[in-house]
Length: 508
Image (cartoon, rainbow, N blue to C red; front, side, top):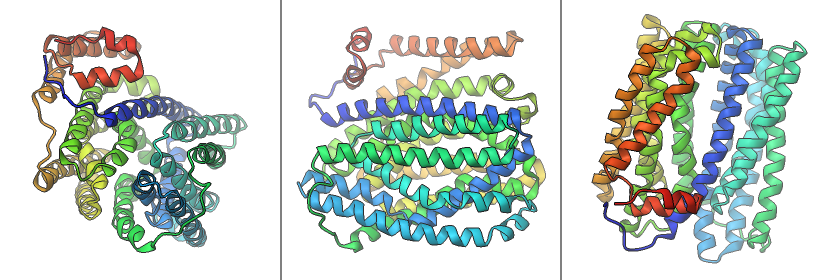
């Protein structure tokens, strides 16, 4: 049986409980996300969908300048002030950040609207001007959206993130978009659905957060303004990080749109979306992992224990998803989307491998570095991430098409994953590799071997989509049982989901 930790860590309980909440939310959000894309790809052409992707990519990149990275200071400073009982300062951080980002984002929105024609000419897509004019109103909305989300993270009440981001926003967006597409509004339907979904999500999320925050004594104390310098000192590197990171996330679309056309952007977007589905586990644990590290950053032993638990769970829950998507790429593209998106087959395979490595090895390290206060290192890593992606994509897209963009992203993800792994070890002597971690990763080998015949023998895409996950997950879990891979931390985390799950967990 694996060695158990003798000290009970309430942080593991919080990680499990809040991570479970966000996981459910991510599943719901992911389901709606796939449904929305399936809807759009069936009612509009790849060129119209690609145009919408390009326009929203410009918005997402621009809005990073608008919020100045300041929302990221909320879930770093507020937990510390709450821990010391300084509720007035915690409230002051939220109020100050909200005021600044609202003014800055409004200025950026006007600037984008004024330059919309120039951007459309750059991509040789005149229709982008109309799309950007309408979508520019979402820049201040997105800034406030980030404030509300990070405020929820700061008090570890991630159910409000689930409500706001994962349920309300995609549900409203799907309903509005579907109705307007049925009315044959085309591109305008996609834009209006995006704007309305965001507006309703902000309203619901803000009301829910304020009610809970007041119940915990936050927002009810007299506002005590804090020094701006620590906020800026912490946030500015992360703001630059966000600029580069968001640009990295959108650079593929920019490069594909520049060298190819909107049709190729739409096809690549579908492949990227399917491959990035591997982020669901990491995105579920990361929001609560960072404040858990921030509040105990001086206790290296406790930080490492929490880090190793998070890394094992991310690896263990992400690996079977990667195996299923990699083996069944063609079938999933055929079933979820129209056959014309089959060109994204190799894109999905490349990104699955890269995302698996990044979230397993490098993903928790990035959140750990932020939680420990090493924001400048995070910024430097993100520069490497963007630079590698941009240079490789620029070199390969004109030669091999959309696969070149996938190779660029994969190269960058693997590079920065290895880099962060080394940095965490050099700075604090922390690393995730244990015997229990190796057992989790090793269980993927028999699962992959078992999944190959399903793809090779079966001809029906529907059968492959239905049967492949069952076989892969079943063999994977069996391998974990045989190798006695479950630990006391696993039992403790499962207890937060269901006592019945804990009783069924095979231990030693």
